[in-house]
Image 1 (cartoon, rainbow, N blue to C red):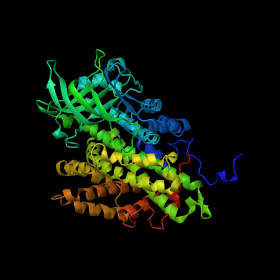
Image 2: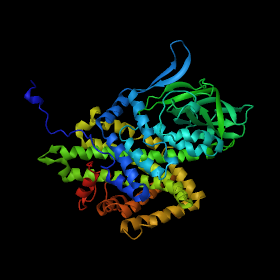
Image 3: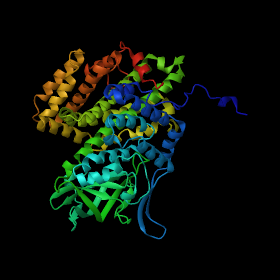
Length: 544
């Protein structure tokens, strides 16, 4: 018989058994807004099915187990043969398999595929972010391989398959494959032109042997990798299969797995190439240009991943405060807590709205939308990913001491939160990329200004922010030292313009007053008290 002191009261129930998609009003509205009406019914049905799966107790437990039992490296078998395999908990394979079957690698082969995939990515990675890495790289490998029509014809059907096969065997024997990527090296990091891995041509046209190393190679259990190496003609992109067509293992020596801050379920490794067979992708000396489309797609996934994490953090905070009582009432009804929750909700909705707008531009594919993406993707990648960690910290604090305990799931979100800002080029890399677009591609700025111009005249604070941005853009000389400030303004102006056009008035009003109008403090929870904050919080509540 339990002692009376052990009676549990005033604890919020677990956020489980709900439709993650239907509960996210900003995400639902973005899908409705951007997707072809003829595809809507099918897409809603698919996304709600994935949302219910994501919200289920069983799948949430998969996410917990995949992180509690991280991958292990086995360099040799029991007889001493080099095998270089990574062992995962079965939950990892279940998660990755479900992600593949949900179409998270199939965007290029479906109508409206990028928008549908983006929404699914936001839903699915709320369960467990680590499996988003191989899903992202597999998806993003397609445009790089399309620079070589023969390679694309061979590999694209496998990459866009909705069948997951975890066994290591020749790709030609598999209905679906997973891809990784290896660019950075210990001496260069983001400066890939400093790479030293050497590619020596073989007699067969387009084939090479690689010798060198990669400092970061995520998802080393993949079937193939796109890597950069120095060929006789300069830095070049190569496809490295994990298993050769005769069934032998390619030379792919995994030196160790990284012991990372977060993203524990996903194996990131250091690998050595020593006579590793590879096929050239694109022309020699054009490796960066060949792989840049892959990088652009993975950068968008960094935005989506951060939007996903922010949404889950906010959903958990609002859910907790809906049930938790203190000082004579529900936390959610306390004016100061309401201000904090509303502020977090604004950041989350702005991230989701921007991310889905970028995905819709990929589906459109017009010259103007491609120009828009050239500027908007690095700006969004810079800003949205940087907002993720402060959101996760504040959301955790909303749960008090409960949020600091692993069982709440909030520490895992917090450890994950800095990652997307680092992957695919950290903040300075993105800011400098925006500057390159401004200086070399005037069509990118024109497309951006046309986009934000759609909302001009709707809110005086947005109009003022656009005017100030134009003044900053008028002089690009010596701008590198203020690049971060400029990119932040580009991103927030773009978010504001989208919210003014599409979000409820109370959301757009609060965003423009704080992020663009300057009526905001230095921490969350400092919104003007006169705003309709209750409506903002209610919109973010995860009730489907």
